[in-house]
Length: 269
Ligand code: ADP
Ligand code: MG
Image (tube, rainbow, N blue to C red):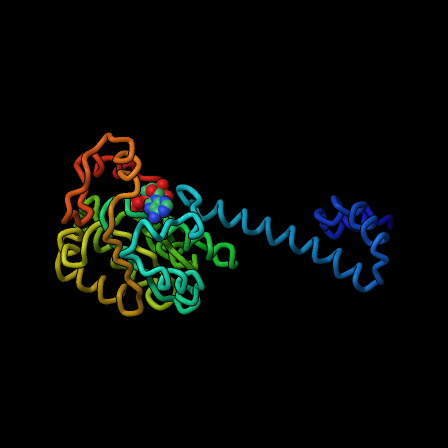
């Protein structure tokens, strides 16, 4: 069999595409057989690995791709960058621990959640992103179509599940109990990153039930890191710079204007 056909049969398309260049370089560098073989196989493996990352990034359904390198920690001094770097090491994913990111609109909660998610994808983990709204739509539909159990099961497969924007929309009691079932299923099996604009004290209101909220928090926080982002909205920074808004009040705790809250409402799916 010819080399091309062999590469084709073995599905070594990355090697096939770069074979001529690789052989030329090997000749120039006078590589021995073993080194050449290792380089050829490494090239194929790298191509496959990269393609795997791209496929898992698509499956993750991130609203956009943001990285930790793009995050300006100087702008958000309330955030402990060492703690974030430690999370980026992903041992929390390995141990099925959780991360809760709290803070007002625009401080970078989704950015941080997505950035950790991207790191997890690059490390080979399966990741899924949902806003609370898209999660509830999915669970409600599944229940309506009599396949709630299968959907809950699917939602336990990703090693990391990101649930963004808890607290913007109050949940019905029924939705809260669906959320509880999901948290119970994933407890100590897979990690959750939850972002919320509401402090834990307000979760009773969000879930429409104090007892359920306590039970959810109990499992969520048993093994968890909480990041409290207290700073100013990054989105408003640009507007302030352009002179479109007044300066923040000295005691500004990050609470945003009504206008900004509405900007937050569109749910990326
Ligand atoms: P939140 O989810 O807290 O409402 P986002 O994560 O959506 O905020 O951030 C709003 C926008 O500002 C996004 O485009 C995000 O990338 C950007 N952003 C927020 N904080 C920072 C930061 N510290 N450095 C760089 N970009 C930031
Ligand atoms: Mg957000």
